[in-house]
Image (tube, rainbow, N blue to C red; front, side, top):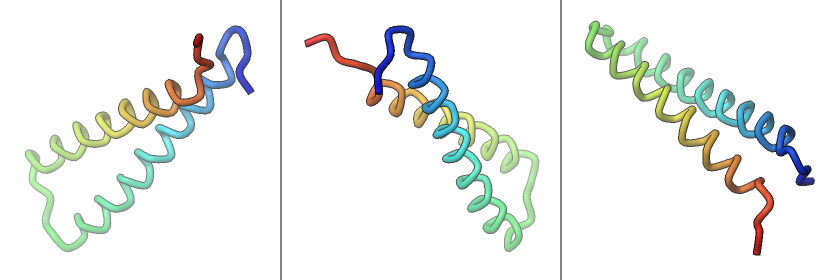
Length: 69
């Protein structure tokens, strides 16, 4: 599946990160319905979503990237 440029791997990793962040956002929204969100909680949620997206995108990309053994 690996290509020389790595565009396919990067795009797949980007979509995987968006999917993970979206699922995390849905879970947070479910919790937020039971708890009244404060500005601090909203900020923490945004930071968490950003961290989830970045972590998943990086992990998937490094997993798909061809290895030079």
